[in-house]
Length: 115
Length: 111
Image 1 (tube, rainbow over the protein chains, first blue to last red):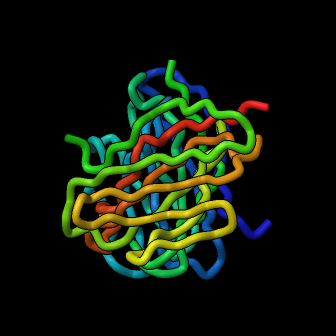
Image 2: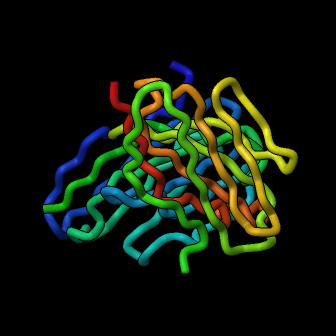
Image 3: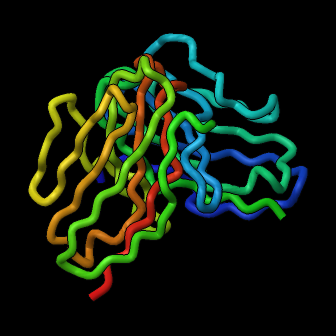
């Protein structure tokens, strides 16, 4: 398919473990976003990549969270020393242009459960 | 006060009814507005952009009121398939961190 692809779709981990979540955006989309959605809540912005510009990390909740985007395509969100409050669905989105210029296309998300 | 506020619902209406809900935003510098639809345990998908002059797409009408800082979504002749959560999205400064998603309004259409 040509949509945004995320993996794993589900991840159960123990408190204190590190996890990596992967996002493969739509080919040709320069902008990539990570959001977090807790049950019954809206989307919480985490981090944004646009081309070769420095990423906007202003939404990362703590220094346990980091993300990178290699070659302007695939992105990995890493959560170190996971806590129970990290349990949520992590959504990745991409867009053709920069932030606010058009539609965000979302992946199906990675559901993280921290025991 | 939240930057974007929506009535969480649920709105429970019969098939064929007209339903409307609003979304208020606090940042008067907000520039662009959208409605996204999210089905249960699925990802959000763009329903429609909201233009200053208002816009219509089939049974759906979106309007923007800058003076009162709210946007609205009207659904006519509602279908069972319209059951979903509708997310209001407001972009303040063409900055990713300023793309604010509301918590959503849950709509349930009954036969």
